[in-house]
Amino acid sequence: MKLLSEQRSEQEISREKDANILKPNMGMHERLQYIGREFVDICHYIILFLISIVVVWTAGKEFFIIFQKGSADLKDILLLFIYLELLAMIGIYFKTHRLPVQFLIFIAITALSRHLVVDVQAVSDNFHLWLLATISFAIMVLSASIVILTWTAKMFGRPEDYLDDHQVPSTEHHLPSVDSK
Image 1: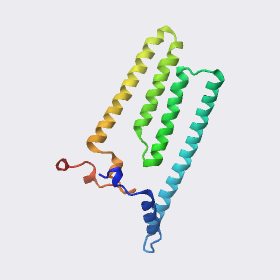
Image 2: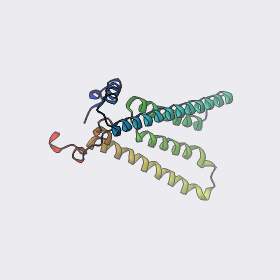
Image 3: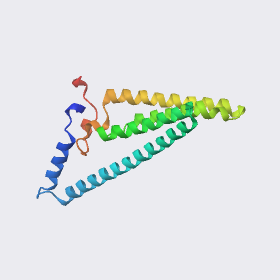
Image 4: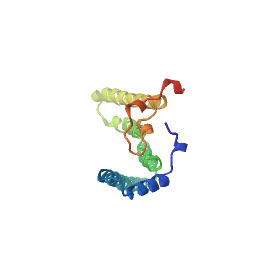
């Protein structure tokens, strides 16, 4: 398992890919795989840039509304935290080329907390207790999933730690050996 500091830089990987694609002995299948990987990477970047623009634009609109009101409510602040977490998740993808599932869970917890604090007050009294219990249970399950994901990543590593530049790992490398500790 490679540590982040041991991984090759993106420029080195890119230069190696470019050198490999120009080799005359490279088959058609390998060239098509290369083109497919590059196409998927370009699509990822375009979509992430568009999502980033939409998130920044929406957060800007929210700031404008807050400035017009002259004060920020708790629901406004929690909504801005959701935007911040979305941008952080996108930033992490650009730095590490990994989309952390934990950030999506953090966003879901923040959204449920916002709903619990802000919107549940407007619900009728008959439905109020069940809604509170359901949202609280969902937050608890999501929190437990973060603990489980973090624990399993520390114990067994992440699946992408065993991938070496889009290569499919063999089954013998999925779990670290007991002797390596």
